[in-house]
Length: 275
Image (tube, helix red, strand yellow):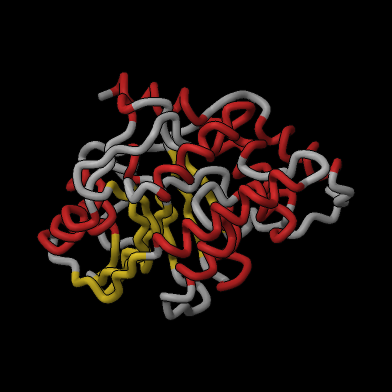
């Protein structure tokens, strides 16, 4: 298991992500001494539909100021910053990748949100929190890298308060199909653990959580990826996006993700379940 964890961290983490993000902002003419959370949106939302997807998912929750939110697989902190800024939440982000956590802290400091967000390195299948600690467990595009789905969902259920909400936006396989590799979350099948939406729903319900919302958003995801692909082709110079995080392999990975969606190998779901 630890070898898998190391492979996942190696896949995502590389030195200098924070500097790469700051440099990309400067190249766009953005004043990094007066940075706003929205300035980071093209680069810090490491999932299909980016900020649009985060806002749509957040719209499924009835927020109250001061709600305690756990962002599982927080990446470099795009979602957690959005939730803290827009919904006045107290957010804790956790991610397996050390470089992501360091970058998330640095970017949150730059936009002045360090007081309402904390970041920890750790595993989604062994959350270092007490039972009944959070109002919302939030996760986007994480379970694809986690083989033990039951443990993944059970840990989030455990740390939720009674009445708390599991809120997710994730990519699943369609039947027995596999994506074309490499994709953004994996170079090959060794760290890709896709399951079907039906299996994920069955596991969540077996843990005693009640599904309140379940929407297949594949069509919107496909339309968004096609639009991003066309914009990238027409741009006079490379557009800063998740390529800043993924590096030179980003183009091939994104093309394969788009092709996998077009060939109906993948499904995308947003859902809310209550404890």
